[in-house]
Image 1 (cartoon, helix red, strand yellow):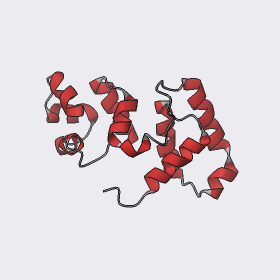
Image 2: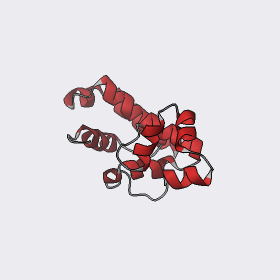
Image 3: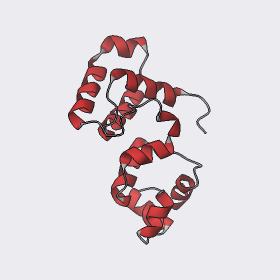
Length: 135
């Protein structure tokens, strides 16, 4: 999807890399599936290539599809924002699952995509990103 869209826009890997603030080799790794974009890079990719953040996230993390809302329609932004606020303000939950500041930052970026609707879904994604052997 990334490669096809990049080519459709007439961009080289190096040009796209410059627009994203990464090395050309990183774009090649992303296109070949050898690396997964960070959520921040995923956001920039979506903006530059004018692609859906949701589709890019699921392309990079297909295993997350079953963990996120089964609704075909994206969440309303206010629902996602409320879920994020409930999650981040629940100190007991954060302590119980030993959620680090770095994980909070990653989940915050995910919340900006607008597709996580519940605290349970944030925990499911957290479990996913904690899995060993991500390569």
